[in-house]
Image (tube, one colour):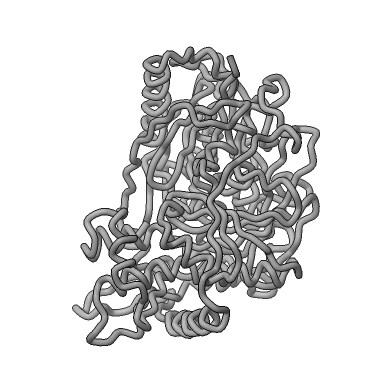
Length: 530
């Protein structure tokens, strides 16, 4: 019987465990548990690290139970990979194993004043001052800024650092450390794809950088060891898969790039989840963007293998806008209703929705922006708003694709897509129409988990998954061709960009008075939308 490889897929709003056949890439079984998000203040987004691990254990055990019901021997699982929401920041006590604060989620906006202070101390007073080393702007998005906030504001974190008990990590590090023994010999590691999202990592030398750590005031001894994305980090200590190697680790968007089998320079994929993330493989040399994108490590599939880089366009709000329409505005009762509601209108009727709930990410990196809906008339109804929300996801993708084409100087001929929103056929057709290129959706949509499982199965010492191009399985896909003329697409996109300009400069870092006369931080909306 074919060996199996599995993946823990820990996302912003859920945790999943998925098991794949290593020869066919077929999904054999899986289990999913929703992860509660915490919003202690406006703009703050947190997750409980213990709840994260509870969901990991539950998903793993429930999947093993399902495999037993299917008559599948769990001993066929030869490796487990980890893929995770990136940038989300944790600090814990290595002696007690206890988290010292909730995980600060990537969407969180509490660090804007920290960002302003950090930028002001750079010689150029530029958010791009560190980009030559990190590929990233100084932004609330990335881990070092969140870690700086924890050091400045949480006494337990400060004390643990002083007493040499603190460990920092993104979610992958927390999961791997916990599964390999925790305080009893747990392995404190991360991979290059996750490290490249911290602002502490030199993407050229592939290591933590003393100057960057000094800039942020981060002691290097609390950082995890840097490893490749595909090697044996340790073995699961207990439970149904005790002894199975944990041998793959990729940030979620890198995992999706691998799962889409974008191993050749120039190939790209767009993932539609809470946010929207377009990555283009640029090969073994980093391409520094001149058009608002970031440069990141895509993957390094083995200790002795070269690192591959990617250009990335990050959009904060994609699927989150549908949840906002459901939970905040009660326009739909379930997320699945959005497609039918939007299809009833078939147009936004001149209505444009810029969901800048967390400011604007690529290509603007503008934290002062706020969400707006413009072009409203007495004729506008909830169907038009639903259509405008879906269009907004597509327009944001168009903006980052245009920037990517300018940076690479070679237009992307076709876009591979994945993620939960891609089941919305109307959205996929809109995306093809707005991009004016075909959009291709694999029939097996679990590409993020698949990528982590592939990395785990291919690791030296496991070697149950062959990543040679001629050994990769054939993947069937659904193809969406553009159906409107280019002129109409350009007109709609031009009006969208006009709406984006109107969303900017709504808030400043200073506090401002609300309509009821009370003081409120500029941070207003991300928590409710995340």
